[in-house]
Length: 582
Image (cartoon, rainbow, N blue to C red; front, side):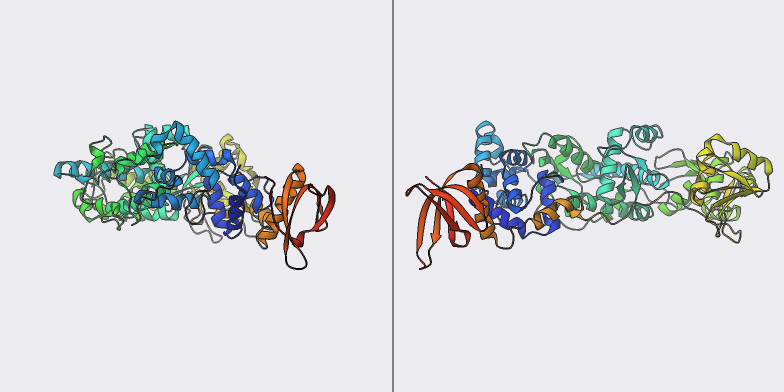
């Protein structure tokens, strides 16, 4: 059991922390949001419980484990701060007694985890050949992540309860050759989340506004945004005091007792390799870094210029072919690539990319707001070979079909109206089984539903009807598919709001001495313990009584005096201290 002085010190400290500070510490300690703590003393007792301590020790970095035993070496300085942040030590970084006891017991079986290890040397500089290979890997990774973020922009990716991407979306993206494996997809999703490009919304990974803006950056700027987000999200044990990170080769050894850490460390190392922070995923490769990674490791801002010099130059022209393809002889500038992909399907993802036009892709572009004129203007400016006649015909025929079905919202009723001059098409829509959830019913020459305009629009578009959204005046109203994840995350205290409210209402923070004294007396009464009570008499002197505590209430303590064998009643206001009888 924890020493009472430690519990008291921790309770007093807890009462002075903010809700956000408490929530962060509770989350890191694995405290349940439904914990049955009623006041700060309950919380302190719970946090210093042996089982809670043992669980916390297994998740400590090596430096913090060394700090538990009082090692004040340079590598343990940060460990002491970690112990304090995790409420395993006081603000001075000295571990509480129960923490030292549990660590000592653990050291008997695993002494090596508390010992100092040889410092991992800083990585050496990559030579020209390695630098070129690293840059090529970064280029492939950038392309893959752009495709993943773009996919989430069009339609959020379903995720599992554990946070990973669902099997259906994994298989779809792997089969489309956007990623090479499910493992790479999970790595990309993790780094995208750390850079703020994707965010978890309910059971989906959705693109953020930052992710949408990132897609329009140059390749070098995309890299800088990702690696700075990755660095900022690294565990504190891997970060250095100057804002950088420790050598990647040593990351696997950072949390020697955490059974989950090896898998997590390997993912972080794979990410560092994929984004060009080190040379490769073998021990030799992890010990070299290209010139653009050094400033980042040392805590400085990312410097993408050296990487940009190694990446293929971006181009702004393509060859439009009579077979309805577009050939980009190099990586197309992001803005142009994004727009081209609204009207054509990208088929290859090498430095020289191929895009294919068909009726569905052109119709999809028009569904997204393009017109025949806007598409021809864009493609004419983009093409080195003009617009081939088959492509022009495809655009014109799609435009002729587009808009035969209109969707608008009725201002008076709020209902959505579906209309068309083609009565046969309306009849088909009315009986289309895939559209039954919309609840469309015939009304005054059209179809009406209570479902929102946007939902009806995209349901018709997915069913490949030539649909167009219009406003009240009948003018075309371009709609953009997909939703953005909110940029503002819930405050850290949100999950623990109920527990924090209970703790703050439970007291113990105002007059901590009186609250602690009453708690000790209450525990003594419950256990019928023998205690020594120091009492201040009216003349200012103090006297000690050895009592078997029997009752507490009305501001008084009752108990049998073991020396005089009489019942005594002592006012709590006169009690100076209490301690167990020896």
